[in-house]
Image 1: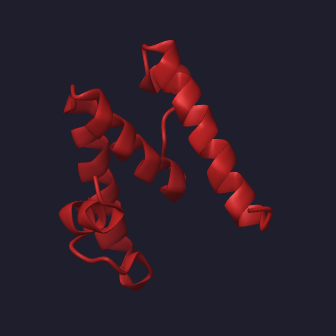
Image 2: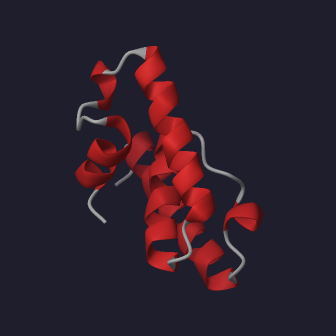
Image 3: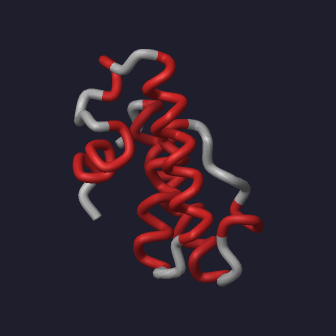
Length: 88
């Protein structure tokens, strides 16, 4: 899934910084709902990744039943955290 597509789908814009607080709340509610309903592991991982970047992701043991998915999520978290810290 494309990050910009996810932003458009749930928030109606690719510029999340331009959202009003109520738009952000609505988008995060839709994102959480879709995550809870999603059964495809690839789409579920993409939704969780966006949630992680927004600071609203559920814990790994809640989000992923499969150990390989949890490991991939940990790798993603480490990669994003390195980017934020400027270590990339």
